[in-house]
Length: 115
Image (tube, rainbow, N blue to C red; front, side, top):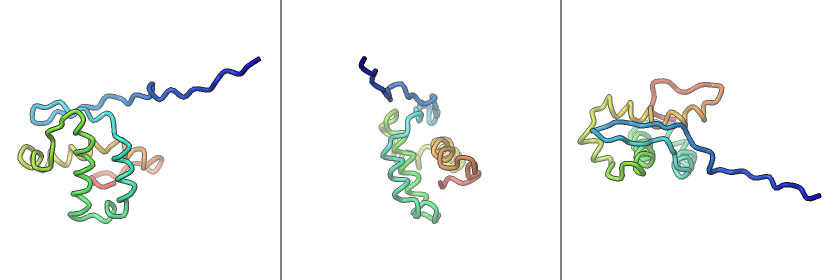
């Protein structure tokens, strides 16, 4: 009697839908590309250090997450179309799944866009 294969169907792993409405655009941020997570892991020390470099790196990752559903998003577009409060809320919302995953039982870091 032959054994049945064990199959892991990753096509069935679908994240919960998460949409940002910004500047009249509906931006799907449900899927976070692996490249973003790898970049965050690679730049972890810089991100935890704070400062302008940290904020710029976080913003690049947020843009990478938004780009598949809103290809025109850039730092310049954000600078021209959102105020600071909107930008901070965008960062928090888009990165929340990563912070939740990284925080595990310790919880997420409230009030800071850094990871």
